Image (tube, rainbow, N blue to C red; front, side, top):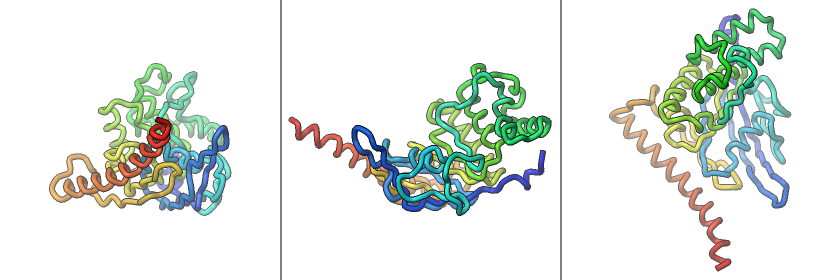
Length: 276
């Protein structure tokens, strides 16, 4: 396999006045005038109340949705659709059930025309990186949820994207497995220098993983505040001043999110009260 230093470096993501409107029985403005820059190699988490457009913004960056207005740039070039320069890990395990672990992981390089021997080496490398050595011949149905998500992460890494997009990838996992995978994602990020944009509902998860936490408003989703996470790594078992700072940041982000959740609740309760 090519030397890791020659692998694709993390890319920049720029949201420029992005708007997304869904037209149907009712007109829903999911994302409204979102501008945000994610620097190369950064780890950014996006958090906010349910329905605030977090996943919509991520899907626009992935090229799975087109913006109604504005644009997303990857390394200065407009995102016009899906591409190998971005890899996405979903909450639900998106592995092909009829393929083995190694066949799933080598799929991207295979599609790109990488010779069989080289793509096998690439797949073996990332399977080992996510701790699944020895499971290459297993099928997804033979794996636990946490193991299936490791396969999904390895598959994205094998395709060597500049940007990794994580859409609540730990949401379906038990607490212990979630913590272990969070630690492994940080280790992988440190080793690969990829840019990661991550969506979550968990303040604790965002604080554990991210350099910056982007708090979104209630729908229509806008950037309410960007919080710099000035905590040392690793972030488990913090003590002293670092622990106090962790508590401060937790309270700050919780307050910001709570304001938006209350706005959502008031908006939902008002019509019901008016009907009484």
